[in-house]
Figure (cartoon, helix red, strand yellow):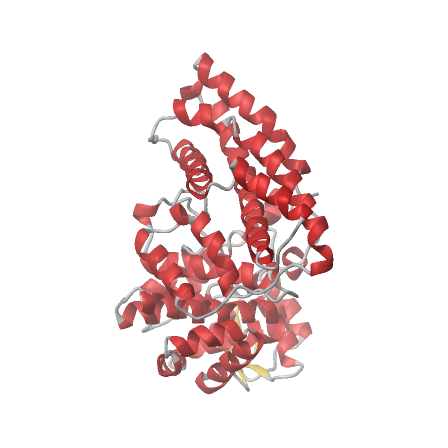
Length: 443
């Protein structure tokens, strides 16, 4: 894809060669580079040797338009894959059954089956990056459920489902060495990863008959209402509903699959985080999201083992005190901040600070009474306190993450010419100084 950094090779041909070892991949036409040089003859399998040759060239047509995979994930196989997803995540099946989504899901899988290029990408994703494939299933299903809960039109539900399913396939064009790197990413590597929505957008725009909203929603699934997302840093007024639905599904997926992995936790455990982030969602999607989980019949599962509870409570008491010290200086900053700004970076910084302050103020999370209750639980923990302790833990961790983002916002404002007044500079410096302690929280 042309959107990749000039020094980065498009990894898709390599993925095709790996798929070819188990599931035959053949060229359906002659494949030429931009200069018209024949690289692959029609009918040839995409071997590793051929892939190495193709990767070195810019092609006349994207390679996905010139190959065929013998066994694809068609509509029937996709529908079956959702059954496996529900087996792994019974809480999702509970929501699915509660909302009677089976027929809708079957119809949407049938719609997916109209597009051979989508089937190709999902087949490659399932074999080469199975975790991203499972994420695609989760996000497609959750986007469908949320769109239905919002009473959107059938076309909007379809577009949200398709975008949720395909939203991360741009990753297939990025080197696995970058995607799977455990060390800190370089700025160039981070920009490469951030290009995956753009790659997905470009690919989807080339599919005849596919709604253009699917491409737009894919492009916007990492955008945030406060302008802190990527690739364009758009604000709420410039974002489409379907893209924000996929963004919500993506964040819910990450928490459900990663944070709750290996625990008895389920979607009901996410309600405190959802409430804490109320201002991150538009009112309609927030109301639907909250209702979707609240009316599912699910009860929060246990996240912490009984034997670890005392140690966890001690950590939470320390975290509560540290986060309180880091948060208190924001009161003065909030008093001096304007409501908004015409400058994008400044507006985004202001919005993030306001959202964090609102979340703490409305939740009462840092109130003295919460700290006193935690201290009491350390002495005598009743069984009914377990879930509440776990809720406090997930909310404090969420606040910690938000304050780390706020620290970046404070630094932006401190260096901006519009915030050089002495009182404002003192407030910003004081807040930044105290927030140095964030790095020690939850260590």
